Image (cartoon, rainbow, N blue to C red; front, side, top):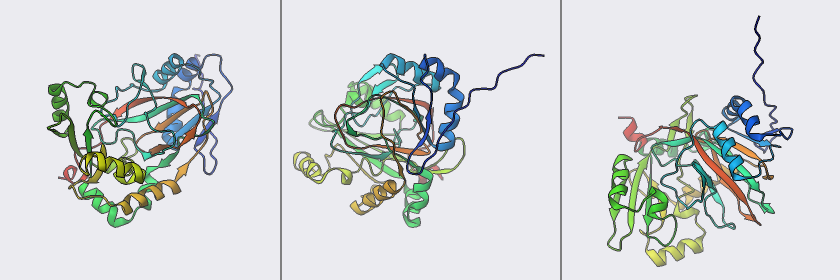
Length: 332
């Protein structure tokens, strides 16, 4: 009689205020370990929304890329990036270029695209001297904490992302679309329900309407899934916002958000969203060699200010199609 060994399991610790964490004995071959524990890692991410794996000893980009490929079902080529990244391997990138002294507020990666990653894969090669935590927050709990009237409006109208590409600040056209060829950019936008306008100075303005609340592709649970707060002008430092308005005008900011019908989203709404995110944030400082797997639909993530060097590699995996232009349009 033939026997089959049970698949490897993962011992996951859950502590208040921290993401689910699995501390593992340092394997001789982290890539082989990831291949053996692929199913357990994905189950843990699905069960807890995110899981931090400590002890793998990840040490160089080629090794990280192989682990990412072992865990993810398909590594995505990033399009519509909001900040430049360095490509380390096909589908593997540096963390987004962002000032170390400024936070990256809670968001769901590429939630303004039509095909967003279902999983985020992150690996720490160099931990910062202080700060730099990748916080996580359960989007189902965030949704339940929002005022009912605001939820109803976002469910009805969705949200809008407005971007200006001017070649001076933020992501360039080539960073976002993989090319600066106008015809290719126009084809991409037409295929991805993005309105675009070429400006007289050669810059590009785009607008895209998306659903703010989606159903998880596996569980069907309603999730707050957007970048309404992070990409808002009101999340910028006041002096940065004032400088950009002086330099480019109120309609020339590199990005901002609105309700799906174009109405502005006030500073008070953005502040409330960030406060609710903060009250639901789980944190654990990075250690060199760590791996983190995040369910990108169920779980938002952030990056806190830091000191010293910080090197985090990122991959986006398991693409999912969740939404059209807005929740209102999806209901038609």
